[in-house]
Image (cartoon, rainbow, N blue to C red; front, side, top):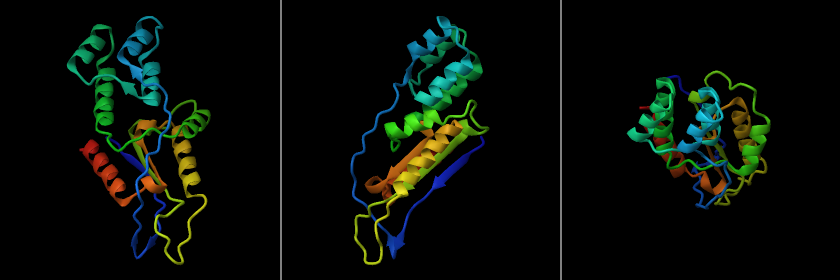
Length: 194
């Protein structure tokens, strides 16, 4: 499996990596595709598997990773390759404990910048993006930054525009960008790749 990991790490050190306190960041994401919607698109809207896959890839899926799901898809005429791709997608997103939806403004801007066709390798690419403006510890000689979070958001929009699914982009900013969270994200990705 071809794996491309895009990393934009904006970490400044002063003797050691600075720890930041946790905050909850809420964001709005598009409604995930359900199994019923997948079947509706195929049976009634006569959409191709590629068109349905594009919906799943861009919006995510709220579909059970169960044998009954795959049996139902097979019964409705979905190809084996589509079912295998969906199964892999559901396994990957089920493990995504550290993943959080991208902020609404990033998603909307990324959608506007989306290329007509995803670039080669987009469906197997992953990104870990960090941007820290406000450091928890005020260390003499280390000033807070102004644009690191904006740059991280811009890079996330760029990757969305290339066709990389939001479920494959980890965006950690300010207080959420801790050494502990980064370690968990990297462990999570390592588990998905093995």
